[in-house]
Structures are given as C-alpha cells and as structure tokens.
Image (tube, rainbow, N blue to C red; front, side, top):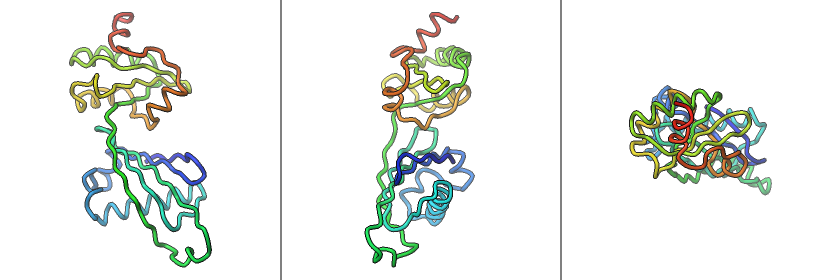
Length: 193
C-alpha cells in the first residue's frame, strides 16, 4: 500500500492486487458489505491520518479507480468540519463511494533497457502501440485501451519488466516529456533490434 498526499484534505492510496490478496479481499468485495473491506478501509484511514497528520472525522468522499490486473487507487477527500456540533459524532465516518475502471495500462521503468526487452516480448504476442514518456528520471509506457488486444496478457508482461504507476495519464501527459507519442513498441523495435 502506498500513500500520497494530493492536497490539504485529499489523499491517494494505491493498493496492489497483492495487497488485497494478503488481506483476503478481491475487487468484488467493494460491492459487498464486507467486514473485511470495512476493516481495511478504517486501517487505511488510520495509517493516512498518522502519516499525514490529518484528523479524519465526519464525512469523507471516496473515489475508487480499479486498475486492470494492477490493483486499485482510492482518492479520499476529507470534508472540512464546520462547527463543534459535528465533533459530537466522533468516530463516525460517512462514505460516498464512486467506482471507476481504468482502461489504460501505465507502467513505470527505471532503465531504458527494460523497455527495449519489454518491446521485444510484447511484439512476440502481437501487442503493439503505446506511448513512451519520461518524468523524474523514470520512463513510463502508456498502453491505452485501443492498442491493447488482451489486457490481462499485456499487464502480466508489463509487470515482468516494470511496476504499475499510480500517476494519472493526464498528469503524465501534462508534466512528463513525450519521447514517442504513438507506436512506441514498433518504434523501439525499429531502432533497437
């Protein structure tokens, strides 16, 4: 589980599929009124509260983004406590959950050599396309939904060479440097055989 503070009252939590599996949960448990899911959520809030020194009371909005074969991202927004009357409900948390799927596969790599090896492997299973970016001394390969024939297979191969990124493709496009905008796998194979 990775935590990131986005704003004064907004926190991003990234849970991998392994994190969920270790706790005996699956993505489907979100729809159930599961005590395990409830416990995990309260544990995450407590850890975020301690790490970022945020007092989480009252109402929180939770946006859950399910990442294909990677896990999920939770964006927790804590509403400001307006007056002392709301403090009477200490320990009570009202959740508003919105679940969204992420159709794109975005992976982070430390070495360019990993991307070359990955491109060779992806081409052997007819996975092409992608856009390559660099940002903060890392490389990012974005495979969007139109370029990926078999998402599960592509995600497994991408996981062998890199790590799922918790960056949003929009943030990457805005602040990252585009190296190859389209057909990254084919372009890399053309220059690095």
